[in-house]
Image (cartoon, rainbow, N blue to C red):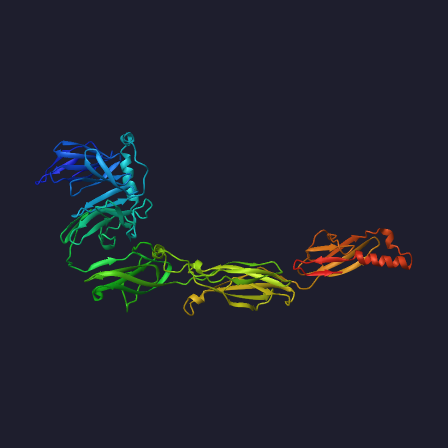
Length: 600
């Protein structure tokens, strides 16, 4: 046996007595393997060397890998030595002293398990994220013992829960998941069989069934993986990590840690098997419905559920309850867990149904656009779904893409009385929504429908026949179309004040000796501009006497460009010329924000 961190190899006799067999002066002894002739090979760290030991106290450095650690060792059928390294995740074949080739570069941090099947096929596992390029021997010599400690720390950081698995595929440096199981046959082609977000800590070969057995960390799961990459979770032990395993006939021995225990998995059962599922997260709050299983003997399966509102079950969860008429009896909550008590047979699938609590939609913004512009919907032609490859179909979600729905575009139109309101709304459950828009005059209590059951968020209408005044618009969003009758919810919002002014301003003209004065009255919407002209073609803006264009009564003055003498009539002809000059000087245009004009 090899020890760390004092790096010694011990021999244990049949009487239980121990003695130091070989001391390589290394910090870590990571792996040991014994050849048929009794030669012992040891993988060490932190200098990444392999030692060959031929007897007590008799050993030599056999291969220097230029890596930090040699994490795993195995022997091929022809006696060649296989080694897995860290930090570059290489699989070596060592044929003689300091002679080796790299069979596979995994792109991961380390190759930590190697098993050779009776037919010579090599299975090996790689874990961790890709590391930096290999270090030179001098750098390795300078590296302190903290290097190995940090390596162990990074391994602990990789322990993950809720494993996800895929089969087949080619090895890639950018593969997802914490660990990958590889298969390498006589073609010398390393095939990535299976990936998991858990960390693979142990690997064994089951010659009886012809598949690999994998033990993982953090959740203590055991899997079988076929040569085609199909994985089946066998069960979960009551320890965090399965650090070693041996398959012997119909029994499998598992060595576990946290806490340290030995488990035996056999074909016979003395009591029902218990399986507890991962948490079902409704992402909010839900009522639980039917739970069904796909089993070889459904009558031998007892199904229970429990619910709670914490991410991990604890004493605040509701108790386990057996199904009633196939329905979960657990109280509404965010999370659900299913327990199966299996008296006989196998279970391949669990289906749990739930109904998320309906949350009301929300209207985030309402905007009334400037007067005079309306919008007409232009529906884009419905296009067929884009062509997809088989890989895209395998990885695509069950729901069709939202982008496949035709998008509505809006074409602007102009007219004097056109008004447009638009709004933004959303639904926490992703439900489809319909909208109702209504109006009322300020100070009134009754609302009047403008639009109902609309799916658009833009509405234009003509206000040229409306009475002048100040109005409000109310938008109501409803998710009833995507919920059971009576369970739909609504939200509403009222717009800012909407001013309707279809009456032009009133102009009163007063003649002065050397100027023209006039008064403009508009009490509702206020003035935007006032322009005057003396020739009917060239107009100039004219500010009011008080300098501010706003609501109410505004007074304006325009000096007569013909001079003061022109306003002193001298005979009928001169008086007629004055009237014509007056008419030209009084020609003016008054402009409102709503484009309603009055002209004299």
